[in-house]
Image 1 (tube, rainbow, N blue to C red):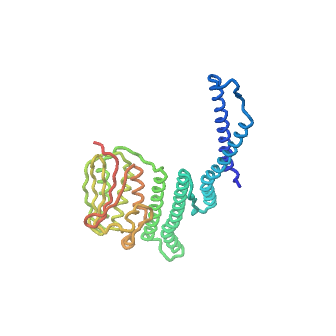
Image 2: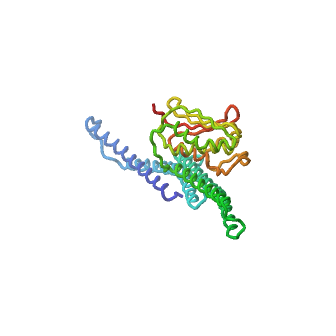
Image 3: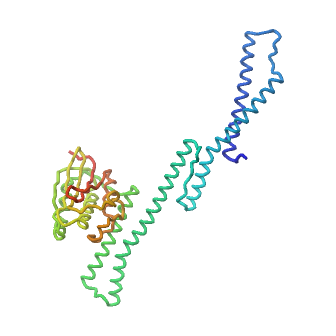
Amino acid sequence: MIVKGLSRQILVAMASVTVAAGLLVFFGTYLAFTILFYFSPWSEDSDNWLTGFDFITLTLLIFIALIVAAVAAIRLARRILEPLESLAMSARRIKDGDLSARAIPGDHSLGETALLVQDFNAMAQRLQDMAADMTLWNATIAHELRTPLTILKGRLQGMIDGVFEPDEKSLHALILQVDSLARLVEDLRTVTLADSGHLDLRLQPVRLKEEILRLAAVLDQELKQDGFELLLDLSDVVVRVDAMRIRQALLALVTNARRYAMRGIIEISLQAEDDVVILRVADEGPGLDADIASSAFEPFRRGTRSGAMEKGGNGLGLSVVRAIVEAHGGTVGYAPSDTGGAIFEILLGEAFS
């Protein structure tokens, strides 16, 4: 039984084409011979009109052609419709919330149909991955927010109940928790805006050496208190960037080294190679864990060694760096140093002369 819809349309179309082609060939041939006989008659008694046998022959030929066309149409419709029906069913399942649904191309599907099914399955897989990532994001954000909020609530409730005195030290501790929440919100905002292509950048020619020196002057004392020495190797280059965002990215890299690296030297270098500005931040180890080196710039990624040295990190620092750099059209990467430390390298646009 022929399925209604597209398969019937294919059958009708092929049958129509078959009939039209048969009639065209038959009458075209007859017309051609009629014209030929007119200019070069074979006999004076020749009958140029169609006979009943001619019509019977034409009918039989068209009937046979219709059978062949129907078989071909059914086979063609099956090759087209089976993967399309599977695709439509999978699309309805995805619409109903089942993101694991996948279409089946079939063993005899056409090449273009198989490619369509393949692209659909790739899209479905991407949707499933995005949904899983969103679930993980929500759970991780809730976890990151819960700790400072719990501390804030406990301290404030203790002050209300008279357990804690609202002295300067207690209030300063509460301010630190508020700052932690503010940093988390700002980092989330930066990553989200960058991923959606809406991160606001104020691009202008910037002498990066001066910006890095200003930032280093602010960080130097705090780094020394934590046992770090800041080493600068800066070339005088000018590049078109958003100075505030680049400082934010550089601060995130230095803060990452301050939290996780062994006490020692943190080196910031700035060079121009082949008209490309390269900004590097290197420390003395231990570097990134092998299990996260390839995905270190994804949000909320932490290695197994991070817990021992972590000081208030929220797992967004490197993803903020990636978001800012990619918004500038650059790239950021990680590589272990020869001494076992970590090297984070930012490649920005063409340097100005």
